[in-house]
Image (cartoon, rainbow, N blue to C red):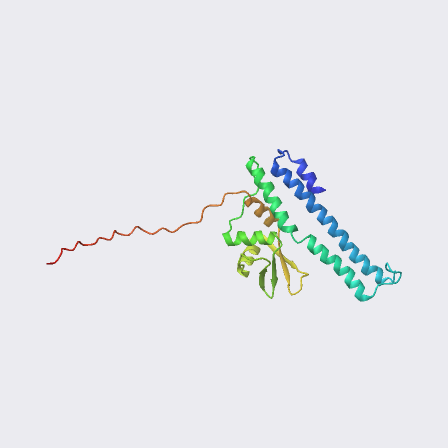
Length: 214
């Protein structure tokens, strides 16, 4: 595989983190290979039925049977690849963080992004952002995403839109080459602490002593 050859070509210490990266890359590769086979099976089932080729029972499948057989394989692919994008991002972050630790940071400088933009860019890399009726949809909880944030990343050349096959979703947001390089450059960096607001110390409250009344 190309990515394994790229990893092997880099002079680096095979630390536990790098060994984990190798294992995850192989797992992702097998998932892609298996998913491709299932999708090809679905296409072959449809093509064979159109050509009148008999199915396993000796007669061509009905329209309903074709949709069922092909649909089951598509659902299996969806299950196999559900965590593919987040796993790929986590593997890349593990690799870059370990390389940075050994004095080999990415060649590119990270883009200047707000925390909201950075969270959005990462969500896009994980395949979680789509557009429906002009509004962004995030396929997990915990982050609020506005269309202005997406547009700001588009203006910076970090993300782009593509047609989305999901029902009721018009477009899927994906990283551009600059977006991939920019996000990679943020991996393993220490994030500056959030600014805190301190109040000026108030004056001590003094209580006037009362003299006892007789």
